[in-house]
Image (cartoon, rainbow, N blue to C red):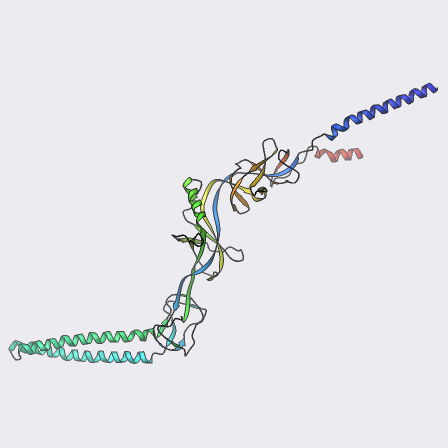
Length: 399
């Protein structure tokens, strides 16, 4: 009986030792097992046509500006406009006292009437003399004198007419009119003020607000780069250059402008070129001096690559880098070159190609050479293998 007990105990110890050794043998294998591939979000890059735009800061200016100045001296009798309102070309703005100018005009008119009367007398004498000389009733010398007096009377009439016109000029200038149509400023003088023809201060200023000019500056180096790209065939010049205007609050102005003028010289102090954009302004929302931004479309680039900005990072040296998923679903680092931002994407110049899967999310637990599971951005995430049987298996085990 004792021998049977000893034999059973030895058998149990042998089985336990075998199980312990088996467990010890499997532990290193479980510790050296590779971690599962990490899921990452990727964007597959595609070649596309891109409009090369540039936002430039500038100021809005009136398309026409005219200073209203008096051309004669006198006392202002009336102001005939609403300050800050709209005026039309030729509208009377100020009335200057006309007393002296009207008297001079009346005097010139009287001189003209006297000269015309003298002309009538001289003409009758000349006609009478011409008839009498034919019958030798008067001498030829007397006839020549009568004809000369007629011509002198005609000259006196012409001189008197010129004096009338000269007197009418200051009389007309006593009514100060608007040289252009637009919105007028406040008046620098009031009724009863003395103004002079040579004064330095303008009575008021008129600005034409429709259309408006938006003047911006662009770096000469950017213009040279764009020209080289067009010459090399990388970009195509835009035939018409539409311009989108951004207001101070970031909103888009409802009317698109047109690039009308580019300065032919570079400002040596700033190294920039002046550009002028003509913008329709029927609602007069744009005002002179307002800060705006002009978004210009300079050219079109065919076959361009746009990479999401979250997929491009900078290393310690400031170089742009990216992580892509290669054909073996492993992470591959790339050193890239980008030139400008277009919306929320970078325009890629080198380092990436069409078809590359750029990683845009899931950087935390991956590194170069790591195996990953790429998931296209915007697509429904795929369920891992066996995920569909876990819940039924657990329910079955529970049952």
